[in-house]
Amino acid sequence: MKKIALVLLIGMLGWAFQAIKFRPPPPRTCGSPGGPPITAPRIKLSDGRYLAYKEHGVPREKALYKIIFIHGFDCCRHDMIPFSPEFAEEMGIYLLSFDRAGYGESDPNPKRRVKSIALDVEELADNLGLGPKFYVIGFSMGGQAIWACLEYIPHRLAGAGLIAPVVNYWWPGFPANLSRAVYKQQFLQDQWALRVAHYTPSLTYWWNTQKWFPTSSVASHTPDFSDQDKQLLPHIFPKQHATQISQQGEYESLHRDLMIGFGNWDFDPMDLENPFPNKEGSVHLWHGDDDRLVPVTLQRYIVEKLPWIHYHELSGSGHMFPHMKDMTDGIIRTLCLERSKQ
Image (cartoon, rainbow, N blue to C red; front, side):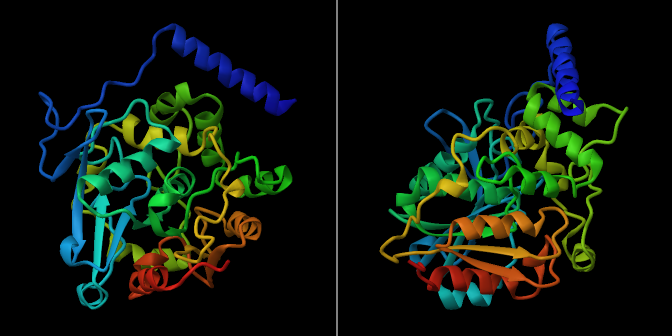
């Protein structure tokens, strides 16, 4: 009854704010009058939006392995998981990072859905001539985009890597008692922020900008980091490009991420089939057992349901483990050289 009352209360608040035409401010689109400048190379998508990108590693025309990297929450194309130039040269690695819609210098997409990111990835690859197949790697919230690629463009993938991927507690494949128990391990403020994003998305902007209650710990840069994360953070922050991340507005970047990532999906990742039945590629998932942002319990359940995923659990590691020395080199080597289990 308490949950029902809570949902009704939030719903009434949402209706009230709708009634008074409460809306987030329009985005400050890059290149528009008064908007941030355009400094990155960009491609034009079929719907007219622009997508900003950044290239790393060897030139793409010489690459043996072409990888598209998808950044996480409150990040942009500059937030690459680190890998060494020597390793890129040795393996022939070309890695492409880009600003997801609304982040950095990529145009906002008010029609953004879970499927949208996969289609953006496909168009980006085609515009830059990456060929019929390429690898994808997603970190944290970018990991959710990998599930979308496995659902909507599996025929374009040579392999896929999920690094500490964020889970949606409302995926129907989770047993209710399990997802509920793990959900309650979060800070109370994060439980509220995700409830709002899931049940009343129209209130997401208001909730994350109001001053009465604590908002999302991740959005407010006060998450619960593990001991290992705290050791790595000085090497990651501060970011010189931090002001670019949500320069077009937090609603079309951070808030829309919450609404889509924790909203109702058009598919359940646990219903996915092996995209590489002939062992021509593989899917890998890496996760730290001391990750306090994305609890490991639900990842273990996912890989039990999808045994074709190669699972790598790192003992004592938190959410930021890709920033450990030589970690990314090992991740990329494993993804590119290992084949499917089945």
